[in-house]
Length: 247
Image (cartoon, rainbow, N blue to C red; front, side):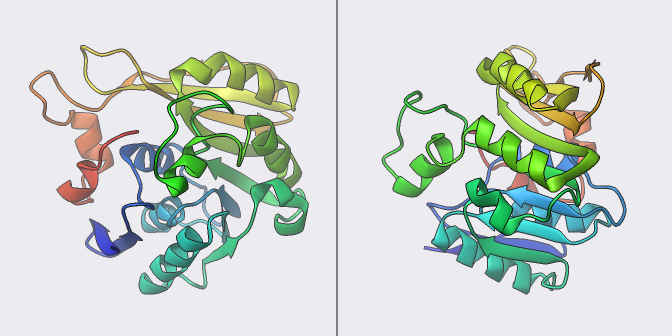
C-alpha cells in the first residue's frame, strides 16, 4: 500500500512498505547540501527523498536521480511531479553500474549515494526482495560507486555517502585509491550511551590527502528527546519525518 509521507509544509514523498526511507537519508541530504546552481546526481535514489530535500533547502542546478528498481523509480517520478519539481529533477530507471550510458562525463559538482550497507555475502538477508536488493551489494559495490562518481564528477567535485561504521576502513582505502580523496567525515550515534552506528563521508576528486573529522552527531538526548542540533537541522520538517527508524 502506498501513502504520502510529509517532509514539511511544502514537501511530500510517496512511500510503501517496500520502498521508504530512513533518518540516514535525511542526514545524508543535509550533509551533502549542494552549492547554488551545482549539477548533481543521486545514485540509488529510492523514492527521490534526497533530491527532494536538496531542492527544499538549497538551490542546486539540474539533478539526475538514478534508481535501479522499476517500482521505486515509478514512485520517485510521482513524488517529483507531485512537488512540482519535474523541471529540476530527472528520474531515470537505470543501473548506476552502467554510468557511461546515464551520467554526463566530468560535468557534475556533486554525487550522493546511500549505497547498500552490506558487502556481498554479509549481513542478514531481508525477506523483502526490494529491501534485500537495496541493502546487499550485489546491485552496487563501493567500487561500482567509485567508478561512477569518478566518471561523472568534474575535477574537485564531491562524492557524499553514508555507511555503517564497520565499513569505514574499507571505504577510505577504496575511494582514496580511485582518486576520490576522503576530505570530511562525521560519525552519527543514536544517543550518548551508544557507540556510533553510521558515518557520513565526503570525498573530492583529485584532492590532496587531508581528512577533517567533524563533531559526532548525536540524534537523541539521554532523556530520549531529539538533540538541539537535530531539532535545528530538521526544524522545518514534521515530527513524522523524524520518527522514521534508522536501518
